[in-house]
Amino acid sequence: IEKECAKILSLAGIRDVWSKTQGQTKVKLNMIKALIDALRNLSEMKIQPNDIAKLGIVEGRMKDTTVERMNDEAAVANEE
Image 1 (cartoon, rainbow, N blue to C red):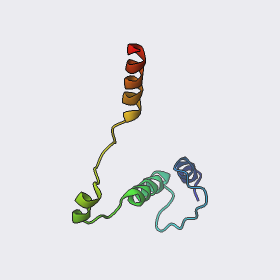
Image 2 (cartoon, helix red, strand yellow; image 1 turned 120 degrees about the vertical axis):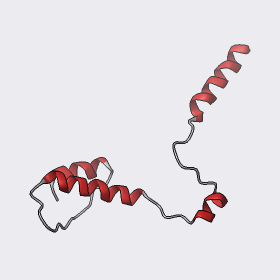
Image 3 (cartoon, helix red, strand yellow; image 1 turned 60 degrees about the vertical axis):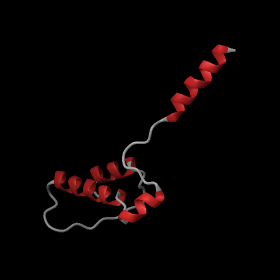
Image 4 (cartoon, rainbow, N blue to C red; image 1 turned 135 degrees about the vertical axis):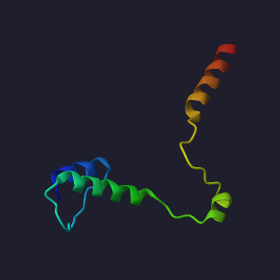
């Protein structure tokens, strides 16, 4: 596997991998773009539309409640 691709995969937490290429692979940027596309495809899930409501799936980033909880606890401690 290309050194640059191996670096990207190690950042993604993938350690044991092999690859096979087709076509022109001298342009490393094309190989890196293909790798990034492949990683994006790995992260996508195919979910039926009627299951989204049943499972309570929401797209986007989740609200971080840790900071809010810490602020609430600090406010309670200050009141005491």
